[in-house]
Length: 461
Image (tube, rainbow, N blue to C red; front, side, top):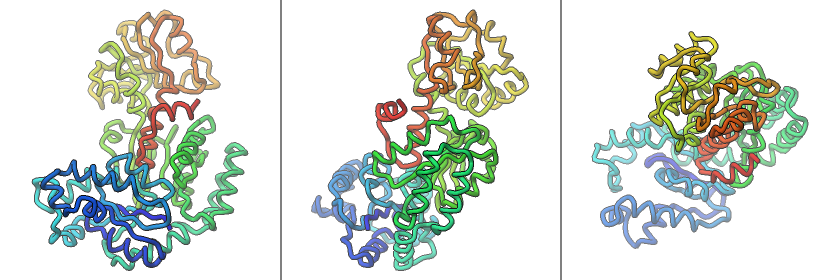
């Protein structure tokens, strides 16, 4: 038993952890108590002298030196706001996020001696911090458990059952796996999934992630995420959900109790109506490429805009054009606007360009208008040039030296547009760079861990 319990104050980490440790016959460690022991002072005293920053530093030191053997660890919700803490806590352990509704938390901690973290009243502070920390909490956990209507004893027994049996019956895992194996995914992936399904009883804590798309056979996400899971010691397996029906994909994901999905063409808009929570960036873009499932609810995000914004952070120029009007184009326009560029959306169907531009308050037009605009930055967010297509959305005479050309297509690695732009003396950014950046941000959502950029780049190859 190697378990971490985290969550907001009042969710029952310490009481549950003590009982769970007794049930498992393993030691129990409370990082708050360890900080107090190390400092020879109470948490209130630490806060009064060193502030929250000093407390967090001590907390991180304690986490870095936790024992590696079987044990139950209870750690505060603030600890998982730091990716380096999450990386340490997750390696070889199962992390349970304990949740409770705000009123239950307020009732449980109203007599606490812990110092407030904001000048707000207790009720307002609870709601504010829960909203502020939501994404970090969700990403750091393997399993989410609601403790609102359960005693610490009931929660401990529930967690012990999950540790033994998993979150779904092995029969459901095998049934869903067979359907996925017959969907046309590569043979080696099907064989590996079959092995995971057949041995699920021996590893019931295995969590499933996957890419939802059709077609999805070109995607390099499965080997990348599997490599990252392995490196960071995350007990997870990444699947290719290759199906033209989103409803069938979501049903399979439910049967597997999937923890998260990478969403690609053609589901980035269709999946919006299925989400319980939408990240503000995702809502603004109007497309979702990342979903987390936790406690029976689904949470949607968009990391495509990060994949566009980061490589363009040092691009010269203010005038930018986005080619296309789909989900990728929306993410590109959002990213360019966040860099304070003047953006024009160009598309073969002008009405679609007008709709997208209207959402962001930018200009629009037809593809031929690029000759009039003469932009300094161009982002190709169409599928033109994606294998097996050999076309280019621009002609050679539309490219000028010094122009920055960013092609979001990453298969093939060098598209006809990129080849042409290199010859024209343009600064080029390939779709591979966008894929690397958005995947890194997605891995952070999936696990709470910041994978080094050079590591992701090396794994992509």
